[in-house]
Length: 340
Length: 249
Image 1 (spheres, rainbow over the protein chains, first blue to last red):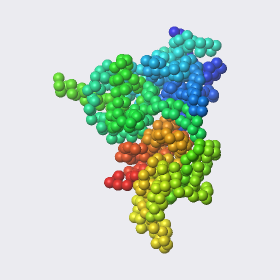
Image 2 (tube, rainbow over the protein chains, first blue to last red):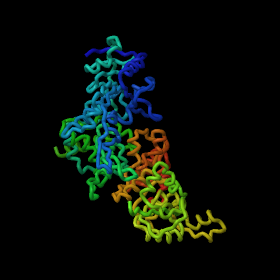
Image 3 (spheres, chains in turn purple, blue):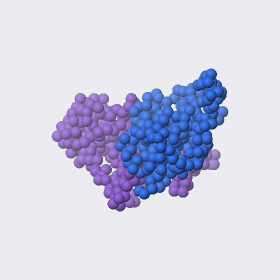
């Protein structure tokens, strides 16, 4: 579709234009060195050049905590809270986070669709932005480059003087209605390169993992892993949760609460009766990597890791998903040479 | 309710901050009192009783008299709950265990030291069976309410056993390590809604360790963020001195 140009000096006007008709969520500064998606009130607080946000836009469709039902034991009744569509514009989303939304859609649509997620997902429009990969991004290795427009309604590509605007859907065209932009006639910017790579085609990674079930890397990683669960909780494609009933002190009413959970946490694998499926941290680490590059990939043909680098960037123990996977690949190749 | 559970509240070596936290339940205090009969509570009333359905006990055990009293309380109680870091883990009191007991006694009581027999500080569970824990320094109020409700309703109570990082990530905080701080969140038991890191403060570990902490890994992590190894272990010992006795060779 049409390509036009948004000068840097008009970015604030553009955000104001979006705000007149829509709720706008966009990256803002969080803390001293981080960024997070927030509802925009001051357009000047929006940051379109950022390495990554702490949590992805997942939080708007699958909230970290949500009430699934309220119950009243006096009347023996239960009601589900009204779930509203987010119905908003997400400005400044990176390609890997849009790829992650696609994967979550798959998870929540397959089998019995998840009503709360699907209702919230309605009315979400995405304005993607390109980014410059930092030392943690490796999305290129999973086939998502910084300029990938998949999933965007409008895509903004960084240019020294502003942003090249691609309108990709009818929804996108509607977002720009009433905001005139000159057609784009400038040369395309040079492509940015990743410094982090996984050195193997995706289709053979599942096979390599299959053969790496007893690889020493799991125990070695477990020596430094603190089992804090951070890698799961910052992952844009992790979708596991826990459900607990909270009862009021009066003992006659309460609510059923859902919150994010993660397979690196020991309690996650504990079931009624006290059985723990993956007692060792090494087994949990293996499971996490298999979930990202094997189990779901075998079923869908796509990696469930989008290369955002959050798990590595956020790990206080310095564990790198790229290092683990590359080590398995390297050892598998060495093995093949020996047996060949 | 015809027979409301009889509740008693006791304190040992501690600052009584956990009991104060109970008195501070301003919004819930009347609801709490409607569910139970409080039959003994030195900090708030004069009455005494012989038997208790639930005893909430604050403080660490640090004198021979403490040991006698906790046995007595245990005998009279159907359910015994340790309240707060001192009762659950020995708390900051247990730092004294890192020094020879006679030195500690002389330092604190000087020439009157022979009047005050003292023991290494112990969590309640080192002496009697403890049925439940409410962790934190002071105790986490939300956790007390969850346990209280479970006990009154006769339901199971699931003690949290995940790191502080879990709630910290749910709250989408910037990791304080990013700000050059040293945080014990990764091995400290959550359930506090990461209330310190929510306000930009680092976790000092007041809720004790998770059940299977990777201590060597945590010390390495702290060291990799700029602490000397000795300093890293001291940080871990602040609230965990009792549990870490003999852990580091």
